[in-house]
Length: 96
Image (tube, rainbow, N blue to C red; front, side, top):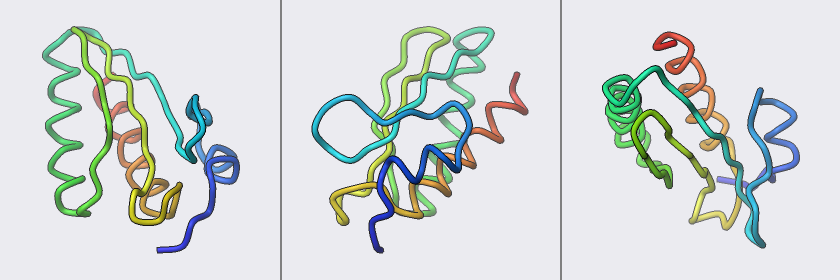
């Protein structure tokens, strides 16, 4: 999978930003009504990620889910990250 880079990725996505730090990654903070909804989001995303063999880095506290995406094999952001980010955005909109 070839690297497209964080700058190109965030132009194609809404609400995502270049992740802090030295590596090529994108990030987004999701907020939900409650823990149950945040956990549903994480559970559905986990199933999709496993299907894609592409796993997010994330952190959850109550209704907040902070996500970082990068493709470790490519040492940066790839089409896989765009696909998973798009899935997460659509899912979050449905759960809102």
